Image (cartoon, rainbow, N blue to C red):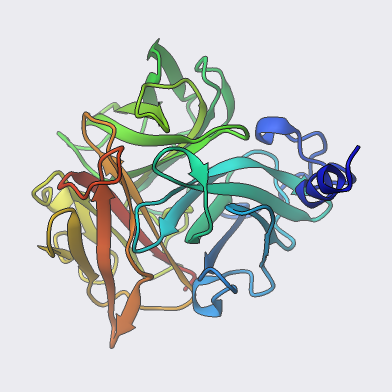
Length: 356
């Protein structure tokens, strides 16, 4: 084995890290019995260093590997299963995805890759959130997630109603996810995030369509390769309704979400934990750009995630990391692109979560 190859394998943690290929854990650590979530963490990486105001636990680390690849360690957050969502932060078109994740001793370790159009890995800033939940949900709201294999077989899941989620593989790169018991008045209530998981090639995912009913949430997830073609890959999907993206609420007292169809969806898809439904705002800032504000929610450490919505292969990221002005969180801007990297106006979901 060449020295270069050995160094790469060493960085990926082949020697000693208890994480299987594709994110299947070879060793597990049972979560503590606690309110949802059992374990969680998020991290903001500016391309050179971890940003403390966007990171919890405080000792979370990011280790760059080969260009465009990163290893994230959440100390003390080892869990069996869970989901990861990651968003590129870059003024140029980029997306990030999960390579694999799982426990290593007491820590949760996540490997990600970031890409430019065409499927080449490239350096980028990013925000990332991990969570794992079991047991009943205390308080108001609905919450659920799935970690799904390409076939639709579920690796791990959570459903706040205590029911079993389901995933059906309907066509290449297309799935129907059913979250039973998480019913809301409809026709659409809450918010969603989707992220691809593939250790080998570029694979990004989005929400193609979605419906809420009094009995369930039904979500169409589509995933694509770097050529913009439908692609079978493992993926993570999270649904939130009056809960933070990692499942907790009150605390944290500061969280919110917004759906841009476009235009902005109704109050039931625009939630602010401090000011109530419809309080968040969006202003077009140019082709493919949207300025989003979450009034009254600014509290650190915090996290922002975005996922594209619609029936084509577009993807979305963040032009810059969010800033705080008084009590307002400002994201300038959400940036959306065609598969070729051309700015385009398209739908998206954006979710803000704080630690407190």
